[in-house]
Length: 249
Length: 312
Ligand SMILES: Cc1cc2nc3c(=O)[nH]c(=O)nc-3n(C[C@H](O)[C@H](O)[C@H](O)COP(=O)(O)OP(=O)(O)OC[C@H]3O[C@@H](n4cnc5c(N)ncnc54)[C@H](O)[C@@H]3O)c2cc1C
Ligand SMILES: Nc1ncnc2c1ncn2[C@@H]1O[C@H](COP(=O)(O)O)[C@@H](O)[C@H]1O
Image (tube, each protein chain N blue to C red):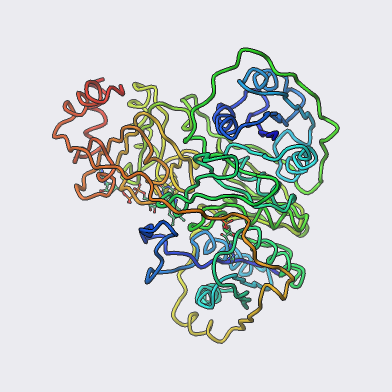
């Protein structure tokens, strides 16, 4: 089975971003960029399926600027076999991304697409569900366990009250949650090898998709800032403050 | 401009997340219908929904196919009813996040995720970058599909009249794409994280599941509090996944949040920094959690928690 893994280039999760003073957006000049952490988990899951003999090819795909090549090379170093970059400058909304991915799926005909559950820049948590809808496929979001069969899969999902297990028919869309696995670091030899793996470049036009934003960003604001309060020396003082100053207990 | 609100419930009880999302719907303005989709025992949930303030009609869809809120079936149902609505919303629960983007794609519109404020009927505020920035977006789509961040809205009180209940079972169908296997739900008789007034939350420093229970539970019991956890505590198996607070866990805003042995990574702060009062207990005086804490104590949580419990 072929597995497709969409990976997004985002601000590294350790970076504390700054809102631009003029409110036009977030200052991304010279900040460290990485693969979206949930997508690392998705790639890892695909690689494990291949190592178990359940997948025979892993295709990583990214929609983004030319630098998203680096993200794809990371996926290749982790174990993906080849990569596709759909070059787009500027912001792409999940709906456009899902439409492009639907086009890639039609070309590649994978049995499974594993995405991250959420990109940590837009925090949208939509693309997998949208892709599934556009393809008319089954979906299992927020996966913490994936047991793949020949024409179906059992997926354990993280839900509000605990876990939920469902069976999905293949082909299907799965989105990875934090506890699906712990992604590996690519080894130096694998990073070198990844440089020789095939990376194809395409455009949204190749899939008949026009990138047009449906949401107009009017401004980007700083969230309310909290001030640090006081440090107390004893537990008695803490209990007193909570009772008599804050009145919360 | 009619609004359709998709109700959150467990087939037995209506979740107060619904009444919180309703507050956002009321702020948008227009006739509001509520859709209750589930199994054949839904009457209690339907009646509770009918009492909510400002509801015009309760649409009830009972079907085996809807019992477990499978996304394919729930999305088809919503789309089949979408015609007269220009806004469709749901609380940003696991169900809402699973189902609504599917609805949006089927209607060829963008979803507006985790709306935290309604500026006007087309303009909304939502968090990006783990809440380190807030985006004000205006939609150009004919139908607005959105999820509501419930920690940002107070629940409505019940209304004075009762809305009409209308059956829409004939809109339910089974897409046959996926099937329910089982729920492995955490046993929990405490208040839910989303509605608790006080949350006692534990991090990696708790060290084991046994210790997590042994020191967190007595204090939580004493305070009538919900228990939360950091990702590190959940990953290590000290606490179940449904207790995770943060960017990708639950977003909470209680009156009091007590962070015990939690460093205060941005992903954790994203889920709790709107709490009214934050207390931090940490042995490291430079831990970032102190930057958002109203009251901090630099000490060992294994000493502080029992002592605090004793003083209440
Ligand atoms: C994509 C992504 C999503 C994430 N989502 C979330 C999320 O939703 N929620 C979340 O919480 N995290 C999330 N994280 C993880 C986050 O980055 C941190 O790793 C995590 O919050 C750390 O948990 P912690 O504070 O318990 O552990 P640590 O950072 O290890 O902190 C432990 C703290 O305990 C203190 N300590 C140690 N012993 C004691 C003692 N005896 N008494 C008192 N204090 C003590 C230490 O000084 C330290 O500050 C996410 C990360 C990524 C990459
Ligand atoms: N530009 C992109 N290129 C590749 N994959 C993407 C892109 N945007 C989103 N995705 C995938 O969709 C997931 C969810 O993203 P989002 O819906 O934006 O939160 C991500 O974890 C990726 O797997």
